[in-house]
Length: 472
View (cartoon, helix red, strand yellow):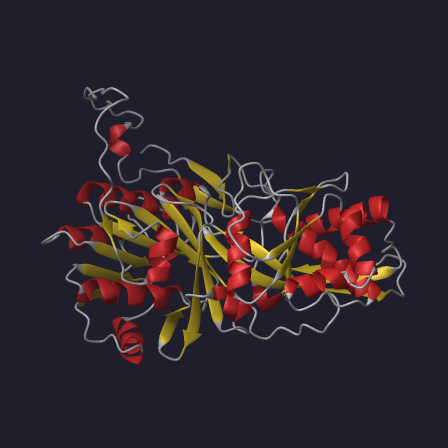
């Protein structure tokens, strides 16, 4: 009998090693290698195995680069925020990966989407690998969706799931909750391991391409915020969506980080209620609802999330420290970016933070990634240090360079229109770029250097003549 070869695979990044090692050289994790038996997977006969002749390939037709382009047919879910993130609906024959923390609402959102599609006439199949059929029915009854014609099953075997899906008419929409619970007989490893996750994802993606059904895979999220399992799963699917939020707040953010058929960095905002997830058509009003305009250290940032303008409050607290090394704490923003802004303020503006602790937070729990928030962060920091409120009718946006210059950012007109819609009358922003239209009647105070912003705040926020002109 031939000896079966084994290999050791890192369960965090998917790196392989011929022997067990304590620390993974690829990702740095300790005790993450697990022994797995090298075996076949679904579709390995195409490549052949040792001692077995390889199947003869077929000629693949080659076509020209130019030709008729057909728009990918989409399956609209009827949930506007979900359709916004996916680019207008689910593309038929595509595979999506939805990740998020446990209990964040992934299953609730997908059950609502599945029920809505089924009520519109689509054939929907929901496969649960974590919950029994009775548990899924109980959630659907609580959401008022028990009457939706959704086909339900509780199964974890990849072979059984594929056989069930191929029996009868092909479904239009398939939900697998979750990919970490599936296992295949072709892989001698436990469910949730790298080999099983890779094999199960490969099988479901192939089924989506062959049948034309939309397959949604639910993935768990590790403590560092990435989807558990090998990163190759994210490269196999057509779109990757992250569900963000926490149990302390009632809203959730669905963010697109990869989409082959639509824009990336698009977000959809939902509110968690007793009857499930409710869409939030105006997120700016949600994040600005509990704002204290008279407090120092608070600046309103006019940001962009994908194609959607959004206003959010950035809060800063600068307090004297009793420690030898001042503390820097950030929530909802990049900590390295905060260090850069502090260095620029000290080097080019003469604002000293060396004897102060600095705490920065984005109100509402939203996470901001674009560099256009630099100017708003700087304004909040200087306001907190000087104890001067910035005013209730002004927004800030602009990118700060290491030289202290304030650079223009994209979509300035959309940011200003959103601010004007919510009652703001002034904006502190960089000089308008070439070809940029005014777009809004809001008064725009242009700053070319970060020191200009510091001077305005030190003088009491805004000159009196500008305040009178802004209010007419």
